[in-house]
Image (cartoon, rainbow, N blue to C red; front, side):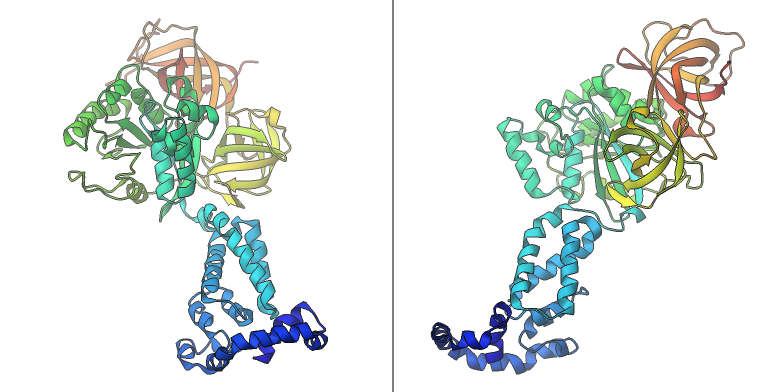
Length: 589
Protein backbone atom coordinates (compact mmCIF):
# COMPACT_ATOMS: atom_id res chain seq x y z
CA UNK A 1 0.00 0.00 0.00
CA UNK A 2 2.89 2.35 0.78
CA UNK A 3 4.34 2.53 -2.74
CA UNK A 4 0.87 2.99 -4.09
CA UNK A 5 0.24 5.95 -1.83
CA UNK A 6 3.50 7.67 -2.65
CA UNK A 7 3.22 7.44 -6.44
CA UNK A 8 0.96 10.46 -6.97
CA UNK A 9 2.92 12.48 -4.41
CA UNK A 10 6.23 11.86 -6.11
CA UNK A 11 4.64 12.98 -9.39
CA UNK A 12 3.51 16.30 -7.96
CA UNK A 13 6.54 17.13 -5.83
CA UNK A 14 9.96 15.55 -5.88
CA UNK A 15 10.94 16.15 -2.24
CA UNK A 16 8.84 13.21 -0.99
CA UNK A 17 10.94 12.63 2.10
CA UNK A 18 10.70 16.25 3.29
CA UNK A 19 7.03 16.38 2.54
CA UNK A 20 6.35 13.22 4.50
CA UNK A 21 8.30 14.61 7.45
CA UNK A 22 5.95 17.61 7.62
CA UNK A 23 3.56 17.37 10.54
CA UNK A 24 0.49 18.47 8.50
CA UNK A 25 1.00 15.68 6.05
CA UNK A 26 1.44 13.15 8.86
CA UNK A 27 -1.91 14.05 10.35
CA UNK A 28 -3.49 13.77 6.89
CA UNK A 29 -1.89 10.36 6.47
CA UNK A 30 -3.20 9.29 9.84
CA UNK A 31 -6.69 10.36 8.80
CA UNK A 32 -6.26 8.46 5.54
CA UNK A 33 -5.13 5.33 7.35
CA UNK A 34 -8.27 5.30 9.46
CA UNK A 35 -10.31 5.14 6.25
CA UNK A 36 -7.92 2.75 4.60
CA UNK A 37 -7.73 0.12 7.36
CA UNK A 38 -10.76 -1.83 6.17
CA UNK A 39 -9.19 -1.74 2.67
CA UNK A 40 -5.83 -3.27 3.66
CA UNK A 41 -6.93 -6.89 3.07
CA UNK A 42 -8.69 -5.74 -0.10
CA UNK A 43 -5.47 -4.46 -1.63
CA UNK A 44 -3.83 -7.83 -1.05
CA UNK A 45 -6.86 -9.58 -2.47
CA UNK A 46 -6.69 -7.61 -5.73
CA UNK A 47 -3.03 -8.52 -6.16
CA UNK A 48 -3.54 -12.25 -6.17
CA UNK A 49 -7.21 -12.60 -7.11
CA UNK A 50 -7.47 -15.51 -9.59
CA UNK A 51 -11.03 -15.07 -10.93
CA UNK A 52 -10.17 -12.12 -13.20
CA UNK A 53 -6.88 -13.58 -14.31
CA UNK A 54 -8.55 -16.72 -15.62
CA UNK A 55 -10.60 -14.75 -18.19
CA UNK A 56 -7.50 -13.27 -19.83
CA UNK A 57 -4.28 -15.04 -18.78
CA UNK A 58 -2.32 -13.58 -21.72
CA UNK A 59 -2.83 -9.89 -20.92
CA UNK A 60 -1.89 -10.10 -17.26
CA UNK A 61 1.94 -10.06 -17.28
CA UNK A 62 1.79 -6.37 -18.31
CA UNK A 63 -0.12 -5.27 -15.23
CA UNK A 64 1.00 -4.91 -11.66
CA UNK A 65 -2.12 -6.70 -10.67
CA UNK A 66 -3.80 -3.61 -9.24
CA UNK A 67 -6.33 -3.21 -11.97
CA UNK A 68 -6.95 -6.60 -13.47
CA UNK A 69 -10.64 -5.89 -13.93
CA UNK A 70 -10.34 -3.21 -16.61
CA UNK A 71 -7.77 -5.34 -18.44
CA UNK A 72 -10.23 -8.19 -18.65
CA UNK A 73 -13.02 -5.96 -19.93
CA UNK A 74 -10.76 -4.37 -22.50
CA UNK A 75 -8.96 -7.31 -24.01
CA UNK A 76 -11.86 -7.78 -26.40
CA UNK A 77 -10.96 -4.67 -28.39
CA UNK A 78 -8.13 -4.70 -30.91
CA UNK A 79 -7.11 -1.14 -30.16
CA UNK A 80 -4.02 0.32 -28.56
CA UNK A 81 -5.92 0.82 -25.35
CA UNK A 82 -5.34 -2.55 -23.60
CA UNK A 83 -1.95 -1.36 -22.43
CA UNK A 84 -3.46 1.66 -20.82
CA UNK A 85 -5.17 0.23 -17.70
CA UNK A 86 -1.69 -0.74 -16.56
CA UNK A 87 -0.76 2.81 -15.73
CA UNK A 88 -4.23 3.97 -14.84
CA UNK A 89 -3.92 3.36 -11.12
CA UNK A 90 -7.27 4.53 -9.86
CA UNK A 91 -9.29 4.21 -13.07
CA UNK A 92 -12.73 2.76 -12.46
CA UNK A 93 -14.37 0.33 -14.81
CA UNK A 94 -16.85 2.97 -15.97
CA UNK A 95 -14.05 5.37 -16.84
CA UNK A 96 -12.37 2.69 -18.85
CA UNK A 97 -15.56 1.93 -20.76
CA UNK A 98 -15.80 5.59 -21.78
CA UNK A 99 -12.24 5.49 -22.94
CA UNK A 100 -12.72 2.33 -24.93
CA UNK A 101 -15.67 3.84 -26.76
CA UNK A 102 -13.74 6.91 -27.74
CA UNK A 103 -10.83 4.93 -29.13
CA UNK A 104 -13.16 2.74 -31.07
CA UNK A 105 -14.83 5.79 -32.53
CA UNK A 106 -11.49 7.35 -33.32
CA UNK A 107 -10.50 4.31 -35.34
CA UNK A 108 -13.79 4.34 -37.22
CA UNK A 109 -13.75 8.04 -38.03
CA UNK A 110 -10.22 7.80 -39.37
CA UNK A 111 -8.78 11.16 -40.27
CA UNK A 112 -12.12 12.92 -39.78
CA UNK A 113 -11.04 15.09 -36.84
CA UNK A 114 -7.74 16.80 -36.24
CA UNK A 115 -8.41 16.75 -32.48
CA UNK A 116 -8.91 13.01 -32.64
CA UNK A 117 -5.54 12.57 -34.26
CA UNK A 118 -3.85 14.50 -31.48
CA UNK A 119 -5.48 12.40 -28.81
CA UNK A 120 -4.44 9.23 -30.58
CA UNK A 121 -0.87 10.44 -30.65
CA UNK A 122 -1.11 11.10 -26.92
CA UNK A 123 -2.41 7.60 -26.37
CA UNK A 124 0.56 6.13 -28.24
CA UNK A 125 2.94 8.14 -26.07
CA UNK A 126 1.25 7.12 -22.84
CA UNK A 127 1.51 3.46 -23.72
CA UNK A 128 5.23 3.82 -24.39
CA UNK A 129 6.09 5.57 -21.11
CA UNK A 130 4.32 4.46 -17.97
CA UNK A 131 3.08 7.78 -16.60
CA UNK A 132 1.16 8.84 -13.52
CA UNK A 133 -2.48 8.93 -12.68
CA UNK A 134 -3.12 12.65 -13.25
CA UNK A 135 -2.08 12.76 -16.89
CA UNK A 136 -4.32 9.81 -17.54
CA UNK A 137 -7.28 11.57 -15.92
CA UNK A 138 -6.65 14.69 -18.00
CA UNK A 139 -6.73 12.61 -21.15
CA UNK A 140 -9.95 10.99 -20.08
CA UNK A 141 -11.54 14.39 -19.62
CA UNK A 142 -10.37 15.47 -23.08
CA UNK A 143 -11.89 12.39 -24.65
CA UNK A 144 -15.18 12.87 -22.88
CA UNK A 145 -15.33 16.43 -24.21
CA UNK A 146 -14.65 15.20 -27.74
CA UNK A 147 -17.33 12.52 -27.70
CA UNK A 148 -20.27 14.54 -29.05
CA UNK A 149 -18.11 16.06 -31.80
CA UNK A 150 -17.08 12.66 -33.05
CA UNK A 151 -20.60 11.40 -33.53
CA UNK A 152 -21.30 14.19 -35.97
CA UNK A 153 -18.49 13.25 -38.33
CA UNK A 154 -19.75 10.38 -40.50
CA UNK A 155 -16.67 9.88 -42.67
CA UNK A 156 -15.57 6.26 -42.77
CA UNK A 157 -12.17 5.99 -44.43
CA UNK A 158 -13.44 3.42 -46.93
CA UNK A 159 -15.99 5.83 -48.47
CA UNK A 160 -14.43 6.01 -51.95
CA UNK A 161 -14.56 2.22 -52.36
CA UNK A 162 -18.34 2.15 -52.49
CA UNK A 163 -20.13 2.89 -55.73
CA UNK A 164 -21.26 6.52 -55.91
CA UNK A 165 -24.85 7.09 -56.96
CA UNK A 166 -26.43 10.53 -57.34
CA UNK A 167 -30.14 10.63 -56.56
CA UNK A 168 -32.16 13.71 -57.51
CA UNK A 169 -35.48 14.33 -55.75
CA UNK A 170 -37.93 15.94 -58.18
CA UNK A 171 -41.65 16.69 -58.17
CA UNK A 172 -44.25 19.41 -57.71
CA UNK A 173 -43.78 22.15 -55.11
CA UNK A 174 -44.76 20.92 -51.58
CA UNK A 175 -44.82 17.24 -52.55
CA UNK A 176 -42.40 16.58 -49.69
CA UNK A 177 -39.02 16.23 -51.42
CA UNK A 178 -36.91 18.00 -48.78
CA UNK A 179 -38.81 16.32 -45.94
CA UNK A 180 -38.09 12.86 -47.37
CA UNK A 181 -34.45 13.85 -47.86
CA UNK A 182 -34.20 15.02 -44.24
CA UNK A 183 -35.93 11.87 -42.98
CA UNK A 184 -33.52 9.63 -44.95
CA UNK A 185 -30.55 11.50 -43.48
CA UNK A 186 -31.96 10.98 -40.00
CA UNK A 187 -32.70 7.28 -40.59
CA UNK A 188 -29.19 6.65 -41.92
CA UNK A 189 -27.63 8.55 -39.00
CA UNK A 190 -26.29 11.54 -40.95
CA UNK A 191 -28.29 14.05 -38.89
CA UNK A 192 -28.30 13.78 -35.12
CA UNK A 193 -31.52 13.55 -33.19
CA UNK A 194 -30.47 16.61 -31.18
CA UNK A 195 -30.14 18.70 -34.34
CA UNK A 196 -33.59 17.65 -35.53
CA UNK A 197 -35.10 18.43 -32.14
CA UNK A 198 -33.57 21.91 -32.40
CA UNK A 199 -35.09 22.34 -35.88
CA UNK A 200 -38.42 21.11 -34.55
CA UNK A 201 -38.41 23.71 -31.77
CA UNK A 202 -37.48 26.50 -34.19
CA UNK A 203 -40.13 25.36 -36.69
CA UNK A 204 -42.78 25.27 -33.95
CA UNK A 205 -41.97 28.87 -33.05
CA UNK A 206 -42.79 29.82 -36.64
CA UNK A 207 -45.95 27.63 -36.65
CA UNK A 208 -44.35 25.36 -39.22
CA UNK A 209 -43.79 22.20 -37.19
CA UNK A 210 -44.17 19.85 -40.16
CA UNK A 211 -41.30 21.54 -41.97
CA UNK A 212 -38.54 20.70 -39.54
CA UNK A 213 -37.20 17.67 -41.47
CA UNK A 214 -36.75 19.67 -44.64
CA UNK A 215 -34.50 22.11 -42.76
CA UNK A 216 -31.74 19.50 -42.84
CA UNK A 217 -31.49 20.24 -46.59
CA UNK A 218 -32.97 23.75 -46.88
CA UNK A 219 -30.23 25.56 -45.05
CA UNK A 220 -30.63 29.24 -45.87
CA UNK A 221 -33.08 31.55 -44.13
CA UNK A 222 -35.16 32.40 -47.20
CA UNK A 223 -35.81 28.74 -47.99
CA UNK A 224 -36.82 28.06 -44.38
CA UNK A 225 -39.11 31.07 -44.06
CA UNK A 226 -41.03 30.31 -47.23
CA UNK A 227 -40.77 26.53 -47.04
CA UNK A 228 -39.60 26.44 -50.64
CA UNK A 229 -36.30 25.02 -51.85
CA UNK A 230 -34.47 27.41 -54.19
CA UNK A 231 -30.95 26.03 -54.64
CA UNK A 232 -30.29 22.35 -55.19
CA UNK A 233 -29.62 20.99 -51.68
CA UNK A 234 -26.85 18.40 -51.25
CA UNK A 235 -26.39 15.69 -48.67
CA UNK A 236 -24.78 12.30 -48.40
CA UNK A 237 -25.80 8.98 -46.93
CA UNK A 238 -24.48 5.44 -47.12
CA UNK A 239 -25.97 1.99 -47.31
CA UNK A 240 -24.12 -1.31 -47.11
CA UNK A 241 -23.09 -1.35 -50.77
CA UNK A 242 -23.39 2.21 -52.06
CA UNK A 243 -22.60 5.82 -51.26
CA UNK A 244 -25.48 8.12 -52.19
CA UNK A 245 -25.57 11.85 -52.83
CA UNK A 246 -29.00 13.41 -52.40
CA UNK A 247 -29.67 16.28 -54.79
CA UNK A 248 -32.77 18.01 -53.49
CA UNK A 249 -34.17 19.91 -56.48
CA UNK A 250 -36.56 22.85 -56.11
CA UNK A 251 -40.17 22.12 -57.10
CA UNK A 252 -41.30 25.68 -57.76
CA UNK A 253 -41.64 26.60 -61.42
CA UNK A 254 -39.56 29.78 -60.99
CA UNK A 255 -36.53 27.68 -60.09
CA UNK A 256 -36.70 25.06 -62.84
CA UNK A 257 -33.28 26.12 -64.23
CA UNK A 258 -31.73 25.16 -60.87
CA UNK A 259 -33.60 21.86 -61.00
CA UNK A 260 -32.18 21.12 -64.48
CA UNK A 261 -28.68 21.71 -63.12
CA UNK A 262 -29.39 19.22 -60.33
CA UNK A 263 -30.92 16.62 -62.64
CA UNK A 264 -27.95 16.81 -65.02
CA UNK A 265 -25.74 15.39 -62.23
CA UNK A 266 -28.09 12.56 -61.29
CA UNK A 267 -27.89 8.84 -62.04
CA UNK A 268 -31.40 8.10 -60.88
CA UNK A 269 -34.37 10.29 -60.10
CA UNK A 270 -36.96 10.00 -57.35
CA UNK A 271 -40.22 11.59 -58.45
CA UNK A 272 -42.12 12.54 -55.30
CA UNK A 273 -45.88 12.93 -55.69
CA UNK A 274 -48.37 13.78 -52.99
CA UNK A 275 -51.27 11.37 -52.56
CA UNK A 276 -53.31 13.95 -50.63
CA UNK A 277 -56.63 14.75 -52.29
CA UNK A 278 -56.25 17.74 -54.61
CA UNK A 279 -52.46 17.99 -54.28
CA UNK A 280 -51.70 15.19 -56.73
CA UNK A 281 -54.12 16.68 -59.25
CA UNK A 282 -52.59 20.19 -59.11
CA UNK A 283 -49.09 18.76 -59.50
CA UNK A 284 -50.09 16.65 -62.46
CA UNK A 285 -52.25 19.08 -64.44
CA UNK A 286 -50.92 21.16 -67.33
CA UNK A 287 -49.23 23.84 -65.22
CA UNK A 288 -47.95 21.44 -62.53
CA UNK A 289 -44.33 20.51 -62.10
CA UNK A 290 -44.78 16.73 -61.86
CA UNK A 291 -44.99 16.42 -65.65
CA UNK A 292 -42.27 18.93 -66.41
CA UNK A 293 -39.81 17.49 -63.91
CA UNK A 294 -40.26 13.91 -65.12
CA UNK A 295 -39.63 15.07 -68.66
CA UNK A 296 -36.59 17.15 -67.72
CA UNK A 297 -35.12 14.26 -65.75
CA UNK A 298 -35.42 12.03 -68.80
CA UNK A 299 -33.78 14.68 -70.97
CA UNK A 300 -30.99 15.13 -68.42
CA UNK A 301 -30.14 11.47 -68.94
CA UNK A 302 -31.74 9.84 -65.91
CA UNK A 303 -32.46 6.24 -66.87
CA UNK A 304 -34.14 4.91 -63.74
CA UNK A 305 -37.10 6.57 -62.04
CA UNK A 306 -38.52 5.73 -58.63
CA UNK A 307 -41.95 7.22 -57.98
CA UNK A 308 -42.56 7.80 -54.27
CA UNK A 309 -46.25 8.28 -53.51
CA UNK A 310 -45.82 10.47 -50.43
CA UNK A 311 -48.26 11.60 -47.70
CA UNK A 312 -49.94 8.19 -47.59
CA UNK A 313 -50.51 8.73 -43.84
CA UNK A 314 -52.73 11.76 -44.56
CA UNK A 315 -56.30 11.43 -43.16
CA UNK A 316 -57.73 11.85 -46.69
CA UNK A 317 -55.67 8.86 -47.90
CA UNK A 318 -54.95 6.63 -44.89
CA UNK A 319 -52.81 4.10 -46.83
CA UNK A 320 -55.65 3.45 -49.26
CA UNK A 321 -54.74 1.13 -52.14
CA UNK A 322 -57.42 2.73 -54.37
CA UNK A 323 -55.81 6.18 -54.14
CA UNK A 324 -52.33 4.69 -54.74
CA UNK A 325 -53.54 2.85 -57.85
CA UNK A 326 -55.35 5.98 -59.07
CA UNK A 327 -52.11 8.04 -58.93
CA UNK A 328 -50.27 5.20 -60.62
CA UNK A 329 -52.80 4.88 -63.46
CA UNK A 330 -52.62 8.59 -64.24
CA UNK A 331 -48.82 8.73 -64.17
CA UNK A 332 -47.82 5.64 -66.14
CA UNK A 333 -49.16 6.74 -69.58
CA UNK A 334 -47.46 10.11 -69.20
CA UNK A 335 -44.10 8.65 -68.12
CA UNK A 336 -44.33 6.23 -71.02
CA UNK A 337 -44.81 9.15 -73.39
CA UNK A 338 -41.74 10.91 -71.95
CA UNK A 339 -39.64 7.86 -72.76
CA UNK A 340 -39.46 5.74 -69.59
CA UNK A 341 -40.18 2.04 -69.95
CA UNK A 342 -42.86 1.18 -67.32
CA UNK A 343 -41.62 -2.39 -66.93
CA UNK A 344 -37.89 -1.68 -66.56
CA UNK A 345 -37.29 1.96 -65.68
CA UNK A 346 -40.10 2.88 -63.30
CA UNK A 347 -40.72 1.64 -59.78
CA UNK A 348 -43.65 2.82 -57.63
CA UNK A 349 -43.76 2.73 -53.85
CA UNK A 350 -45.91 4.31 -51.12
CA UNK A 351 -44.30 6.16 -48.21
CA UNK A 352 -44.68 8.94 -45.68
CA UNK A 353 -41.86 11.44 -45.44
CA UNK A 354 -43.00 13.01 -42.17
CA UNK A 355 -43.30 9.76 -40.21
CA UNK A 356 -40.56 7.94 -42.15
CA UNK A 357 -42.89 5.02 -42.89
CA UNK A 358 -41.66 2.64 -45.61
CA UNK A 359 -38.42 4.59 -46.11
CA UNK A 360 -36.16 2.25 -44.16
CA UNK A 361 -38.43 -0.35 -42.54
CA UNK A 362 -41.69 -1.89 -43.80
CA UNK A 363 -44.90 -0.92 -42.00
CA UNK A 364 -47.94 -2.82 -40.75
CA UNK A 365 -50.62 -0.35 -41.93
CA UNK A 366 -49.70 -0.97 -45.55
CA UNK A 367 -50.43 -4.68 -45.95
CA UNK A 368 -50.86 -4.53 -49.74
CA UNK A 369 -47.32 -3.30 -50.51
CA UNK A 370 -44.96 -6.27 -50.59
CA UNK A 371 -41.81 -4.73 -52.14
CA UNK A 372 -38.70 -3.48 -50.35
CA UNK A 373 -38.79 -0.14 -48.50
CA UNK A 374 -37.06 2.83 -50.16
CA UNK A 375 -33.48 2.70 -48.80
CA UNK A 376 -33.08 -1.11 -49.16
CA UNK A 377 -34.53 -0.80 -52.68
CA UNK A 378 -31.91 1.82 -53.60
CA UNK A 379 -29.22 -0.49 -52.26
CA UNK A 380 -30.46 -3.42 -54.32
CA UNK A 381 -30.40 -1.55 -57.65
CA UNK A 382 -27.90 -2.85 -60.23
CA UNK A 383 -24.61 -0.98 -60.71
CA UNK A 384 -24.25 1.72 -63.33
CA UNK A 385 -21.75 1.20 -66.10
CA UNK A 386 -19.27 4.05 -66.11
CA UNK A 387 -16.60 4.90 -68.68
CA UNK A 388 -13.46 4.93 -66.55
CA UNK A 389 -10.95 4.75 -69.39
CA UNK A 390 -12.68 7.40 -71.55
CA UNK A 391 -11.58 11.03 -71.95
CA UNK A 392 -11.91 13.29 -68.89
CA UNK A 393 -15.17 15.22 -68.92
CA UNK A 394 -16.23 17.25 -65.89
CA UNK A 395 -19.01 19.81 -66.50
CA UNK A 396 -18.74 22.61 -63.92
CA UNK A 397 -21.81 23.23 -61.77
CA UNK A 398 -20.47 25.95 -59.51
CA UNK A 399 -17.28 27.79 -58.59
CA UNK A 400 -16.01 29.96 -55.76
CA UNK A 401 -12.83 31.35 -54.21
CA UNK A 402 -11.31 29.57 -51.22
CA UNK A 403 -7.51 29.67 -50.98
CA UNK A 404 -7.48 29.48 -54.75
CA UNK A 405 -10.13 28.63 -57.29
CA UNK A 406 -12.55 25.85 -56.31
CA UNK A 407 -14.96 24.21 -58.76
CA UNK A 408 -17.78 21.73 -58.20
CA UNK A 409 -19.08 19.17 -60.66
CA UNK A 410 -19.79 15.54 -61.38
CA UNK A 411 -17.16 13.57 -63.25
CA UNK A 412 -18.96 12.10 -66.28
CA UNK A 413 -16.11 10.03 -67.72
CA UNK A 414 -12.40 9.40 -67.31
CA UNK A 415 -10.52 9.64 -64.03
CA UNK A 416 -8.81 12.57 -62.35
CA UNK A 417 -5.80 12.42 -60.05
CA UNK A 418 -4.03 14.96 -57.87
CA UNK A 419 -1.44 17.17 -59.64
CA UNK A 420 -2.91 16.23 -63.03
CA UNK A 421 -2.76 18.79 -65.84
CA UNK A 422 -6.18 19.46 -67.39
CA UNK A 423 -7.62 21.96 -69.87
CA UNK A 424 -10.63 24.18 -69.16
CA UNK A 425 -12.82 24.41 -72.27
CA UNK A 426 -13.92 26.46 -74.17
CA UNK A 427 -11.27 28.97 -72.99
CA UNK A 428 -8.40 26.47 -73.36
CA UNK A 429 -6.79 27.41 -70.04
CA UNK A 430 -4.31 24.81 -68.79
CA UNK A 431 -4.94 24.12 -65.10
CA UNK A 432 -3.44 21.87 -62.45
CA UNK A 433 -5.43 19.98 -59.83
CA UNK A 434 -4.11 20.99 -56.39
CA UNK A 435 -6.56 18.98 -54.28
CA UNK A 436 -9.49 16.66 -54.84
CA UNK A 437 -12.51 16.26 -52.57
CA UNK A 438 -15.13 13.63 -53.28
CA UNK A 439 -18.24 14.33 -51.17
CA UNK A 440 -16.16 16.35 -48.69
CA UNK A 441 -13.58 13.54 -48.28
CA UNK A 442 -10.13 14.26 -49.66
CA UNK A 443 -8.90 11.64 -52.14
CA UNK A 444 -6.01 11.24 -54.56
CA UNK A 445 -8.03 9.89 -57.45
CA UNK A 446 -11.63 10.11 -58.63
CA UNK A 447 -13.68 7.87 -60.91
CA UNK A 448 -16.81 8.67 -62.96
CA UNK A 449 -20.04 9.28 -61.07
CA UNK A 450 -18.40 11.05 -58.14
CA UNK A 451 -19.30 14.58 -57.08
CA UNK A 452 -16.04 16.44 -56.89
CA UNK A 453 -14.64 19.65 -55.49
CA UNK A 454 -11.39 20.53 -57.22
CA UNK A 455 -8.96 23.24 -56.19
CA UNK A 456 -7.28 24.46 -59.36
CA UNK A 457 -4.09 26.33 -60.08
CA UNK A 458 -3.52 28.47 -63.17
CA UNK A 459 -6.98 30.01 -63.55
CA UNK A 460 -8.91 32.77 -61.81
CA UNK A 461 -12.40 32.20 -60.44
CA UNK A 462 -13.73 35.06 -62.64
CA UNK A 463 -12.58 33.22 -65.79
CA UNK A 464 -14.84 30.23 -65.12
CA UNK A 465 -18.55 29.98 -65.78
CA UNK A 466 -20.92 27.13 -64.94
CA UNK A 467 -21.16 25.00 -68.07
CA UNK A 468 -17.42 25.07 -68.77
CA UNK A 469 -15.82 21.64 -69.01
CA UNK A 470 -12.58 20.19 -67.68
CA UNK A 471 -10.92 17.87 -70.22
CA UNK A 472 -7.57 16.18 -70.61
CA UNK A 473 -5.25 17.86 -73.12
CA UNK A 474 -5.03 14.78 -75.38
CA UNK A 475 -8.77 14.64 -75.92
CA UNK A 476 -10.50 18.01 -75.77
CA UNK A 477 -14.27 18.28 -75.90
CA UNK A 478 -15.87 20.04 -78.86
CA UNK A 479 -16.95 23.62 -78.57
CA UNK A 480 -18.82 25.83 -80.97
CA UNK A 481 -21.83 28.03 -81.52
CA UNK A 482 -23.76 26.32 -84.31
CA UNK A 483 -25.12 22.77 -84.33
CA UNK A 484 -27.83 20.63 -85.90
CA UNK A 485 -30.21 18.88 -83.55
CA UNK A 486 -33.33 16.79 -83.48
CA UNK A 487 -36.00 18.55 -81.42
CA UNK A 488 -39.36 17.42 -80.04
CA UNK A 489 -41.73 20.34 -79.45
CA UNK A 490 -43.49 19.50 -76.21
CA UNK A 491 -45.53 22.53 -75.30
CA UNK A 492 -45.92 25.68 -77.32
CA UNK A 493 -49.10 27.57 -78.04
CA UNK A 494 -48.25 28.95 -81.44
CA UNK A 495 -45.93 27.87 -84.26
CA UNK A 496 -42.13 28.03 -84.18
CA UNK A 497 -40.34 29.50 -87.20
CA UNK A 498 -36.69 30.19 -88.03
CA UNK A 499 -35.51 33.18 -85.98
CA UNK A 500 -37.21 31.94 -82.81
CA UNK A 501 -35.17 32.60 -79.60
CA UNK A 502 -35.16 30.43 -76.49
CA UNK A 503 -32.89 29.45 -73.60
CA UNK A 504 -30.78 26.32 -74.10
CA UNK A 505 -29.97 24.07 -71.13
CA UNK A 506 -27.29 21.53 -72.06
CA UNK A 507 -25.46 19.54 -69.29
CA UNK A 508 -24.73 22.33 -66.73
CA UNK A 509 -24.60 25.14 -69.29
CA UNK A 510 -27.31 27.76 -69.84
CA UNK A 511 -27.08 29.85 -73.00
CA UNK A 512 -29.37 31.88 -75.23
CA UNK A 513 -30.03 30.20 -78.57
CA UNK A 514 -31.77 30.96 -81.86
CA UNK A 515 -33.31 28.51 -84.30
CA UNK A 516 -31.71 29.73 -87.52
CA UNK A 517 -33.18 27.15 -89.91
CA UNK A 518 -35.60 24.22 -89.95
CA UNK A 519 -34.07 21.41 -91.98
CA UNK A 520 -36.77 18.73 -92.04
CA UNK A 521 -39.62 17.17 -90.11
CA UNK A 522 -39.27 13.65 -88.70
CA UNK A 523 -42.21 11.26 -88.61
CA UNK A 524 -42.70 10.16 -84.99
CA UNK A 525 -43.76 6.61 -85.81
CA UNK A 526 -41.58 5.65 -88.76
CA UNK A 527 -38.65 8.04 -88.24
CA UNK A 528 -38.78 9.12 -91.91
CA UNK A 529 -37.51 12.58 -92.77
CA UNK A 530 -39.53 14.94 -94.95
CA UNK A 531 -38.10 15.82 -98.36
CA UNK A 532 -39.01 19.49 -98.23
CA UNK A 533 -37.98 22.09 -95.67
CA UNK A 534 -40.81 22.94 -93.28
CA UNK A 535 -41.68 26.62 -92.87
CA UNK A 536 -42.69 26.12 -89.22
CA UNK A 537 -43.12 23.45 -86.54
CA UNK A 538 -45.83 23.19 -83.94
CA UNK A 539 -46.55 21.29 -80.72
CA UNK A 540 -45.91 17.51 -80.69
CA UNK A 541 -43.91 17.60 -83.91
CA UNK A 542 -40.33 16.36 -84.26
CA UNK A 543 -37.95 18.26 -86.48
CA UNK A 544 -34.27 18.62 -87.28
CA UNK A 545 -33.15 22.23 -86.97
CA UNK A 546 -30.00 24.31 -87.01
CA UNK A 547 -29.41 26.22 -83.79
CA UNK A 548 -26.97 29.03 -83.10
CA UNK A 549 -25.90 30.08 -79.60
CA UNK A 550 -25.13 33.61 -78.51
CA UNK A 551 -21.72 32.51 -77.17
CA UNK A 552 -19.39 29.55 -77.57
CA UNK A 553 -20.44 26.49 -75.57
CA UNK A 554 -19.02 23.01 -74.99
CA UNK A 555 -21.04 20.16 -76.40
CA UNK A 556 -20.70 16.73 -77.97
CA UNK A 557 -22.93 14.83 -80.36
CA UNK A 558 -25.47 12.59 -78.66
CA UNK A 559 -24.00 9.57 -80.41
CA UNK A 560 -20.48 10.16 -79.04
CA UNK A 561 -21.32 11.30 -75.55
CA UNK A 562 -24.99 11.19 -74.48
CA UNK A 563 -24.54 13.19 -71.25
CA UNK A 564 -23.30 16.20 -73.20
CA UNK A 565 -25.53 15.82 -76.25
CA UNK A 566 -28.96 16.17 -74.63
CA UNK A 567 -30.63 19.51 -74.12
CA UNK A 568 -33.86 21.31 -73.31
CA UNK A 569 -35.21 24.55 -74.73
CA UNK A 570 -37.15 26.83 -72.41
CA UNK A 571 -39.01 30.06 -72.91
CA UNK A 572 -41.23 32.19 -70.67
CA UNK A 573 -40.64 29.86 -67.72
CA UNK A 574 -41.88 26.76 -69.58
CA UNK A 575 -40.06 23.86 -71.16
CA UNK A 576 -40.83 24.05 -74.87
CA UNK A 577 -38.72 21.32 -76.40
CA UNK A 578 -36.23 18.58 -75.70
CA UNK A 579 -33.59 17.49 -78.18
CA UNK A 580 -30.30 15.81 -78.95
CA UNK A 581 -27.26 17.12 -80.81
CA UNK A 582 -26.75 15.36 -84.15
CA UNK A 583 -23.91 17.31 -85.73
CA UNK A 584 -21.55 20.14 -84.87
CA UNK A 585 -21.23 22.80 -87.58
CA UNK A 586 -17.73 24.33 -87.84
CA UNK A 587 -17.56 28.13 -87.68
CA UNK A 588 -17.04 30.06 -90.90
CA UNK A 589 -14.27 32.58 -90.32
